Length: 113
Length: 116
Image 1 (cartoon, each protein chain N blue to C red):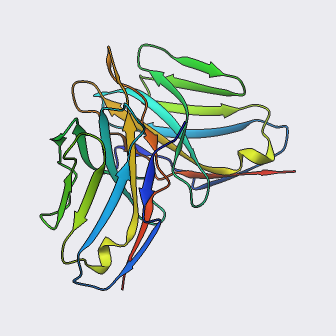
Image 2 (image 1 turned 30 degrees about the vertical axis):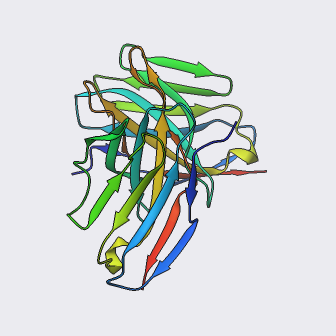
């Protein structure tokens, strides 16, 4: 049973346009959500996070939106750049003492020049 | 500053052999995590250390897998009697301890294990 789902395995966007990556979760115990970016042969790199008490967090070109009632979050990248091409993973963490992350299967973003 | 390092970067072994994978966390980080990533999937949690003790090993798939962190810094993931299904990238992450709980997890580059 996948608790964190990224239903789009790939996304292509033109440079300068907006990239929107989506993520759905099923476990209502998740209270902290993160996005990681991964280049080939490297480990995941932390990008941005959001607590369940917020519905939006912004950091430069990256904004994460959280809709708790729909159990849905999204990552917006504006404007998209060719260097943003990577696999993006959504991850979630439950409240309480357990701190392991549950990851989605990732979305390959390709930004076309 | 140095990030999380993992050695070896690649390991090829034969079915039935024993392997050890090493992780050096970021200095000062008290929490250390092991994950496994299979092709086309996201990382899956294996085990979490807070200091020297395994705080949560619920993700270890079976008793062939074992991990230690004897001095609260470097950790070793040990796999006995390897099987072809163990082939994956093994990722290590560390995080600082914050007043409100654990901080962001920072990942190493991973060890790609191939069992022939």
